[in-house]
Length: 586
Image 1 (cartoon, rainbow, N blue to C red):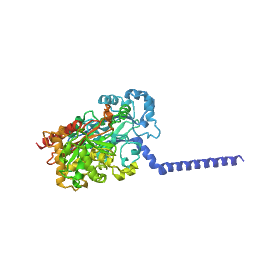
Image 2 (image 1 turned 90 degrees about the horizontal axis):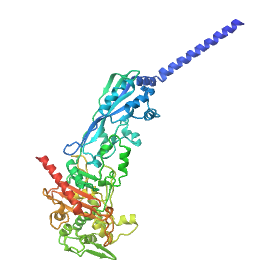
Image 3 (image 1 turned 90 degrees about the vertical axis):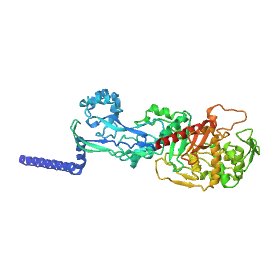
Image 4 (image 1 turned 45 degrees about the vertical axis):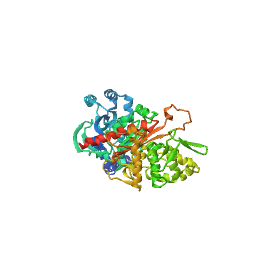
């Protein structure tokens, strides 16, 4: 009986051994066959360290090949969590000069790969790098990473056009377009940096390094060099840009200058501005708060994202339409006695005493409101709308620099749809002199001026030098009519009675038109001293008159009269461009 029990015990033990062996075999099969690839990767991850090598970003140049940005190295202290002994966190805190709690929080973040370096401190100086390197042997897993950083050579000059870099937003991180962008890299978030980001950013490289159990580097196994991003040559002239911004000074406003024969943007200014260097390595909370709470709104691109009544600069449209439609000729005279009455309303002229009997040339030169009230009355609002939109006003320009405002060029249909009211003659009077419902952006007004300067061709504004010009419209204008208007615009600047004499240049013949856009209705005898109630000042110009090379629009917010505030800025800008071109020709 005892033998039988012993045999059963041996049999049971044998079964147990067989089952255990089968379990071991199955486990080995699972580890080596089913999950072999996965564990091989983990093994390699323990043995290998893959370090991303950032690609130098392409350089942005102005039209004369002056660099507007440069690349410079930027150093980080990082830790590889899997290789770091957490008992040494106090030493690491002392070496890096950051709180131990911050280190623990960063390396313990949920979902973080234990083999991916965690950046603990950025912007290291060479002396700090040397100090850290001397203590790395006591801190396995501590490494120094380098990235290419961006520096904006001219600081806040051209910031709204050039733009800045920033880390990808959560939505961008999920975007397939950024799948090849290394973690914590910076991408274009504004302006040209954003518009041309894919071309500028290049292709990162990588180093595959073998490390020992302590995380120390043994040897370099493989290295792929990064590919530098493509350079970009913009259409802007940085000398013109600098002079334009200097001329505007601390005033809020905008200036847009265009090459009339191509549509290339020579200058795009929005003031106040900001320094894009604040963003290149991640803007601080203090700096971001200061910018966003600034009542002058420096992040607003006034050149294309703000719209204003164009004031008397719109009289260019009214004059061209009047001549083309035959409702006036060069000899048509209107008697200006300081204003006209329409029902219970009085529509005044800026010169209270009146201009007397004026014809087209003098009406443009001296900007007689009454003359253009009459022209508007003869044309009707729908004809004014037709020519204004044909000259590029009241619609997007196609500039891919950011969301732009449409502006407003009203007509009978627009008022009925938006105001639920019929159109009145008084509305036409206001529209004819660029007031009332009319609103344009500085960019649109610069395009209008460019179109007049080149004879009626409306171009899409371009930011890249020598890009293929894109014609978006063509206004078939009678050359004689256009010559009459240009003659008036030349007189605005060069005749003693002209409202834009402050733009007269000793270097080149300039033509232009002043504009004063009313901000609030001014009651008789009442003066609003607060700046926010003052009129906006406009000036549009092109030069040389004989063969235009530059056309522009200048806006000074709450600057008062266009002739006094905006015209001198245009003169400085035009002179800067002409001097720049002449220096290149030498």
